[in-house]
Image (tube, rainbow, N blue to C red):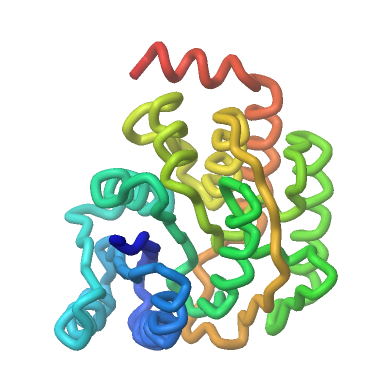
Length: 263
């Protein structure tokens, strides 16, 4: 029987200091994933980095057969990385396969994939590595940013009220082939439009509108593992998140109808 696949997509912009450690850590999980019936494929999405991110990924493609480079010819931002991941996942996957997205800055540990798969096997379409589970920890993040994230989480919960979701913005998630195909059926080839970091919230809400069932698992967010400067502009990100949350809530299911008609 042919194994199912887990396809990991890592959007990267100037992550030369982090991407090698992250991909190596993913490949440490390969044997255990095989024991659970999954082949592992890893895709580094280089978004026109100005450093040696592309070279680092290329070196890993020579070292490992399951590592691949996707190279953007123009800078598309995180939203472009998401849409590229979705497009390639649909092309390369079949029913029963799963897509994993996570930040390329080595703040998320691949070892949590196993608890996420446990939840998937219970019948969920998307499982989130959440900062708000009892077992979760956030390490290396300034207290004021933790506070702002917590307040934003309360806002999203009130505005969007997606069942079983507390962490609307964490980039570390696993998605089923079936729900990603439904997303594209409902919202078109490039289903995510928001250009700020709030695109992660947009993706989650559009999956909800597409019928996704969600669950969360606890994990450690290790910001102290990240080398280099943060690319997030906190105040701008907060403003965009509030704006996007309000617009998604206001438009609701009309959003799906409008975008489906405009495909």
